[in-house]
Image (cartoon, rainbow, N blue to C red; front, side, top):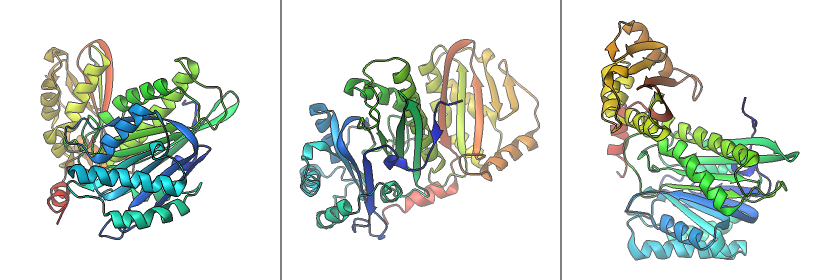
Amino acid sequence: MADWQEIDGGVTAPKGFKAAGITAGLKPSGAPDLALIFSETEAIAAGVFTMSQVRAACVDYCRTRLQAKASARAILCNAGQANAATGDRGWEDALESARLLGETLNISPDSILLASTGVIGQRIPMEAMRNGIPQLVASLSEDGSDAAAKAIITTDLVTKSIALETTMDGRPVRMGGIAKGSGMIHPNMATLLAFVTCDAAVSTSLWQQMLKRTADRSFNQITVDGDTSTNDTLIALANGQSRTAAITEMGASAEKLEAMLTAVCQYLAKAIARDGEGATCLIEVQVSGAPDDEAARQIARTIAGSSLVKSAIFGRDPNWGRIAAAAGRAGVSFHQEDLQIKLGSFVLMENGQPLEFDRAAASDYLKGAAAGAYLQEDTVLISVCIGNGSGTGTAWGCDLSYDYVRINAEYTT
């Protein structure tokens, strides 16, 4: 049993955080498009960002800010324009956004982090930003997490939010998160934005280490379409308002906090994978018997990202050969005579040999997942064992449907 419970509130569940989301006129659709997360006190900040060489201005801005000072009080996120590949003018837009928000909040721009999502190559409509920021700040609320979650999405079908509570030093400690992502999702951070808040007290270096390890076990283990974005951003703030003892080194308290951080991020990561553009189910790939955990994660990512595997799942076809082929090309050495493959409870291959199985029943298993309740009964489980090593790893993806092509073919038109 996990040593925490799920609660309401998202990023405003932890003490000392407020949030807001408004329609500022950044999106042509008129949907909410500007979000703010705000800590009443300076919070320890950590971040993980895209590995792409083509980066949005907000990514370079955040990296620069966090290198200079690993703390922040606010995260400003616009949706509709990626502000990526926009050159010097895009950079100036980012700086102006932070300056305007700092003036309105009466805090230093150095305490503000930025995120953007939308069409690459499009700048932020700064007149709408200038007019929207005062309204956004005025809308800040301790109940504003849902509004913020709605304001950061683009092609997402649903918002992604979670909050957890545990006890440390006899006091409640809370952690919340919101995220967006549906397409351009692939390991090395994918087109996703995720923001986590926490009211525990933790050292800057330890918080960054925790977030990096957590990203490797969550957001870096999901894939929808093999495309990594220019804007991928994961930011975590910890403001210490729980008044618990500061966590400065690994130990029982640190392990508990990191486990809760991992749970929050894995939930959000799975929600993003399930909401893949055109997807009908979530795919979870569990790999065991590898030489080490990274090798297992690599195989799991390869299988989850295989277009042929994803297409077979969409067609409700228990084509285990595609799973075997993906495992074999993952770049991890193993003996094929050790390979075992399961689809749900159906054993399809054992000791490298194909087995007889009820193909119709296995297909029905895939159909059942497509009809299952969101993030409860809609998961196709693929289990792969490659030997007797101690390494294990899990990755998440989704099936590849006709609608993925339709959605992305019309993305800017």
